[in-house]
Image (cartoon, rainbow, N blue to C red; front, side, top):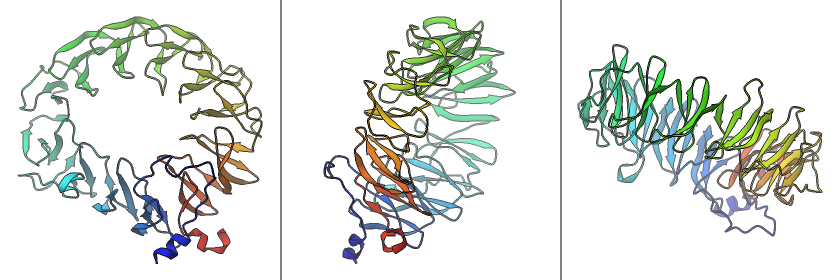
Length: 443
């Protein structure tokens, strides 16, 4: 039986690829002839017998599986930690996960010797509500009573407040009578109920307001920045975008202004902690500043993309695209009708959208062009020619032959592809995690 499965576990691998170049996930979703999903290891050996309607790729060692409209959870050893009879399963937090039956909530441990064990909350029969663990505690509710429990299921604190949120560091937000305050793990008030609203910002920090004026405080209730700004928005890392008199500036976690509000708009640029998009006062055009307020590009461009591997696309008022680096220097001139995110060594680009090329960090264009190139990940790009899709690298060398009708970018060494109406996963070396080759029509 093992020999038979290996015969149909197709290896398509070009000579310049090494099997040791990237570690693959312990389990990879496997789609069989009966249109059900299971999991195999990187040798093609079935580790979880196909039986699910849907099997997600592993994410940090765990994957959700579905049967009909019910969901469960497995670990990278193939063990079903949570049975497939829940409506929703939240993301894992601090080694635990919350699952909802449609009527009540259950909390499961997913790591250690108790992995797969449902956490029993001592003294509580039914959880009408539950949130993920945060700062070592989870917020649950029995009827309308908010309760904080630890990872042993012991009740640490019962509250009497109408509003109660999860802990952030050593404090949690509670509310009553339309006002908010902070409490510690013993229920002691760290602030008075003076604030109209308090928002948890992570890392033990909270922003608060009275009326329309905002400030910042820590999880001890200590005010870091007094009520002063029209708005405070958490930014990248330890920086905050602040608004005053209709203008925007930056502030750090200590409440010190990096530069005073002087721009008409500031937004985070995805992919860089130290770069921000600014907007012109009168027009919808944009530029770039660094975290010290230095202007790298004047606000005169129609749009700016996220930075990937130090490069981003930028669009002018004529809808032409170019490529820039993190210093604001232009790698190419405005000449393309489309540029996709940069990936390791190159970015897909097209002058007329009928043929696509790759452009490298020096602005050099590949001689070869194809009908289409998609957004790439992990150094390869899905590409189409002759009506079939394969994968190329940053030098436009074919790494997986053109054979599919559609293909997605790689993530953690695997990607989902399609042949006719049949979807399955392949790895970076072209191996198919399916027995589709048993069907002559698909060969």
